[in-house]
Image (cartoon, rainbow, N blue to C red; front, top):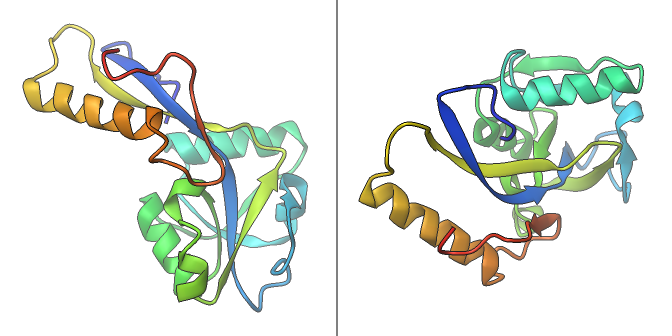
Length: 167
């Protein structure tokens, strides 16, 4: 999650992604085509804890529009939050990569794009004063190839200009 607030790290941006509200089919916001951030003030959500970069960016965006997000539960880890939402434990605000579209046919959930939030920027971080190891360089090349070759084709993923395998 970029930007980083750590002086000893440098980030290599890869792509941006939209946010989704993942809700059980019986949730009051289910079957909507979109939902605005301000509408989420009336609903409890599965969220990451305060102090994590993803949660802090959500709280800052909510404060800008004069609302406060209410946590039904605070869970560390976006994948775990997505899994709990998929299992029907509540509504969750997650990045689009946390819940691929094919999950809708497998689980009784709805994926609803959220308006009013800036895209989440995703990148690869490394130590500023060290050369990346061979495995790190290889991972960076694979991720960049997936992004630049269009293999990452989920709706809501936005490759960044200038991302190349060699960068």
